[in-house]
Image 1 (cartoon, rainbow, N blue to C red):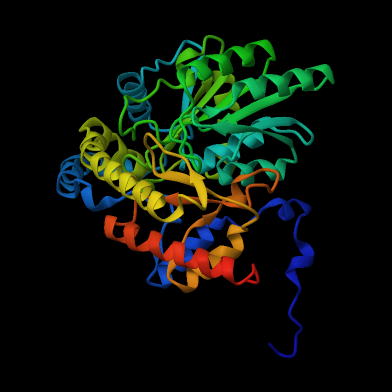
Image 2 (cartoon, helix red, strand yellow):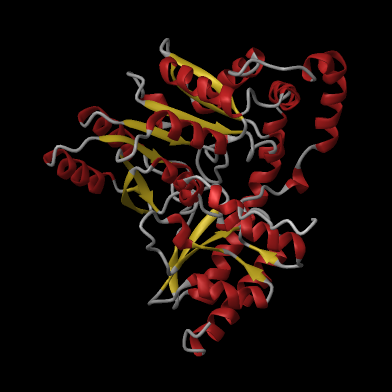
Length: 413
């Protein structure tokens, strides 16, 4: 180094950087990679049921034909064959048909969609509404744009739209306008709730009455255990108010990093401009793989084999919660998806409880990260899709032991 002093690069950081926060989930994934733990923390699909042989055979057949194209640049909006395939998927599986004013853009995962929509829509001081709790990566994407965030509570039927109506009326009386409402209406992350059809209609009616957009994040709709998927709010859209976003991460592969947005053409054009600067386009190779896997219905094979397993794992976790936490708290009972939310009685801080649980080899995500206002300190998100049934049984008993140790220690951890 010739005696030259190291520069303090942090002095050069932008002011915006302070609004970015480490994701609790990403930090936990680092822990689970480096140690042998039972993880209720991530949102990982269980790939033990994935039809690998069929998926590889499809790729061998198709990429021989398209490999040269797959190695090239692609349009920022995405490859037209993939857009067509996703339109067909939405029509067949979810009952959503794009209207004449709608367009679609392919994303590098729905995480990118959160960032691009935030950049396209949010000015400092704009009002946005989220559920309590909400998806933590959405909060992390919105905060750097400096909005004013309001929250609406949930119950077993999802977001309480009567409470939402009261909030909207109050804001309107103060001359304040909401820019958009962000929602995960089906098999919510982290709450595990599903917004009822009645409330979906009520929400859409409120968006018209109070003139705001709905940002519908819908990655879990096809992972339903008891009922058929509930039609997305987008199916009600007659005026371009609903920004629909989904991903292949939960029904095919998170490693593909393929998501999409269907929205008003003018918004898609704006998002396309920002995406050009962000990453030019989503991986061409991933898009060609996705085209073939959708065309050959690989996602249906995966869902048909994984849903019964997920259902059984959910039932096991619910039974273990009843066995171990019936007097200590309450929890949601998801109809599908990958998660449920455990709320502990009293003033238990689950961030501190996590330290005790990790020493015993169990991890979860403290619920505070999912609340825009820092509440929910006595909650935790539990994932049931990735651990085995045996791990769920063992892990929940260990979690109870950690909880008892934490309580008896007088909250000193």
